Length: 105
Image 1 (cartoon, rainbow, N blue to C red):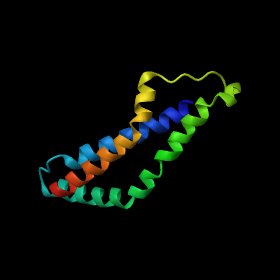
Image 2 (image 1 turned 30 degrees about the horizontal axis):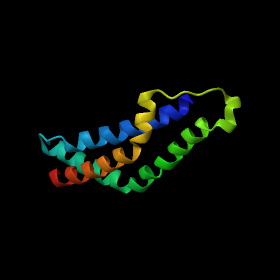
Image 3 (image 1 turned 180 degrees about the horizontal axis):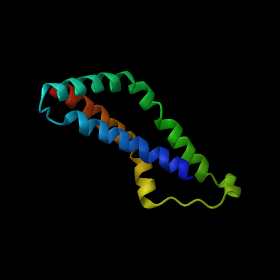
Image 4 (image 1 turned 45 degrees about the vertical axis):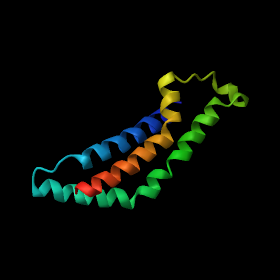
């Protein structure tokens, strides 16, 4: 269970931090160059990143499945449930943020 939560939260953090970093105003040419390189690298991994969403969802579905109750009664916190339910929205915000960042780079 803790591994599934770690996957969920690290994925959400990666999306948020990436966009936040790329949307920062560049103060010098080196920072602009780093942002351009990072933006290209992230864009090349977009399909891979998006491909992480369904496996994360399936892990939580499996964990919550009553027919597998022998692994113990697993309770998700409200934050866990909210984060899990917000995966698709987080992805949409990420793609919008990446488009905004591209305009600023």
